[in-house]
Image (cartoon, rainbow, N blue to C red; front, side):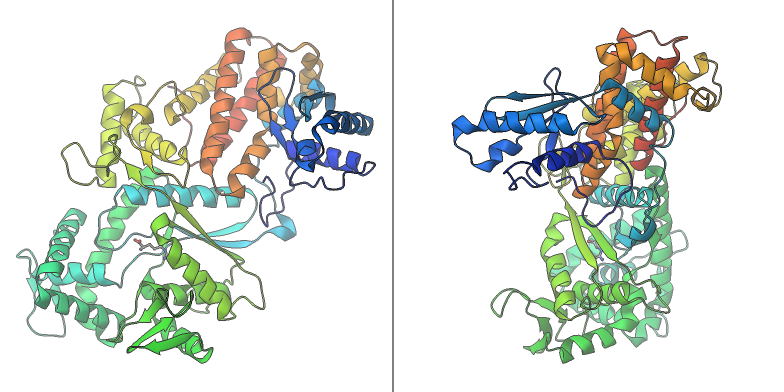
Length: 598
Ligand code: ARG
């Protein structure tokens, strides 16, 4: 489905235009069954066919009637036209094929070089959207799973902003739960730190403590949780202290932990070109009592064996646990309070009442989010105002052998180690001479992750990540740098503006389209499909579709560049300018800045 849910876009969709042409044609027929859903035109790889529709095949007509029906619709379609269609044909068993007029393609390719790739204004349809992503737990090192959440969330945010929505990017860090409590208790047993035997303070972390130290202490603590009941009891108690008023005992080491983690996270976000703002679980603590009260009085949250539960899926299915027997809160509790605030707005936390909230985590949390959204609906939080709630889940990153990804030296891969290794690999392959390999490695990892189907697990290999000929950041950045070279050679030192602003620039391309080389036409056609690629990408938040599209742009550009001389050829330079604009915009949406020379 191409129609992006809930998003009005003023931008131009080629597929939707052809579709509406078909819809108009059908008014005169007796096939009202054909709806926008089944009349969808798809890109075609056949020669002379740009788009194909299987609408007629979906009508359930007897086989003999299909081709004649398609012929009838075809005739109506051509009658409708218009400046868009060059020809329409029918192929067995009843496909409807169309090809577009070259001048029409040229017009839209030209728009890409100028206004087509500019951010939109969503006008009245602009939504206030909160995207919740990255969201690691304080005290842990970022690992490869956080790569996915971070780059997906950042890309989703970029796409929404590009469409003119107002976006708040939030990292809902875990700063309250058993992870940080485990770390704190363990830290006080480590020699480096100064445990205090007497309150008011539990102690202090060593001034030299690093994120790696925290990671190590946390891992040690995690092991002890299983084997050491006294330790576990202490951790449980600290969870309560953090959530309740005697948090002050832990204020110092808690603040230290958060500061160390935050600084380490920020370094990696920066390397990955991820923009996100921290607003942790602790922010919402003060809302919890009100929210639980309202859930209880709505009859939604009920006592069960001393705990407070919400039975979303009925009494015998696993409930949403919102308060433990010991009075402690859980992940679901803070998420309920958080969602309450996001839906209603909160004067001190964030006054915005969002229209849409998107959560980006791995797929293992699907049940949690289904429960969360359903609880919000049942509690009536969305009854006065529709709020769209989405969980955008993703699969795992696996090693080359299909098992959990580990670093060369063994052990699970920290994100930092993964990125560092990508930089080293890039240098050792001398993928590009004279480049900042750290930057290329980081960008290549980000792009590769986005190029994978979001819901599937994928195998990570540096060979694929850095493949010069594949659907990779290096391949696209290389093409983009080559376009800069063409521009400079054409005497356009800083930009293509002087070429494009000539009064007849559009006509130059339009005229030339009359005898385009097939590779020119193919390139222009792909460029004119930019908007459709964005719509497809957004419809189900699948950035790999945008990556696939940019890869098509790049391969089409290379084919064109090999077959056609561009020097001193104004219309072809206009095509180069359009390719450059589309490629850079596409890369920017994916969070990759193109480089000028490679
Ligand atoms: N901190 C959680 C984790 O590490 C992810 C939080 C996602 N966001 C949310 N609002 N639940 O798994």
